[in-house]
Length: 137
Image (cartoon, rainbow, N blue to C red; front, side):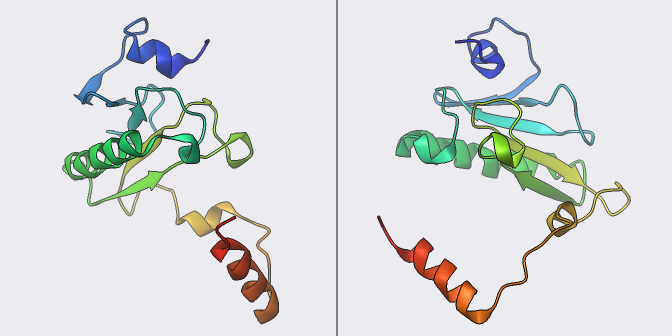
């Protein structure tokens, strides 16, 4: 497999590790958006969150919780982001959580500022969407 994050886990590519568990690795992003921009990845290769084993998911998000506290030593807030698939902007096809320290003067806005074409939904469309998402199949 030619996955850069798997190579980092295997020690084939150096990185600035911050935290490591049996199932998870946290390290500084090589192309940070702000100082302290951190990535948290599962050591097992998964492309999307819904593919993950429950125990890997639990460990991943526990590590995210710990790392958010640590990164907020650098800024007053943080942005936690996951691109779940290529169309969402995922550049490396391996699950990874971005923890980006944020301050009011960092030049970035809220997540809603990312989308220029937002849908205008009727009550009926909202209800149809909600029903599709409630369906367990």
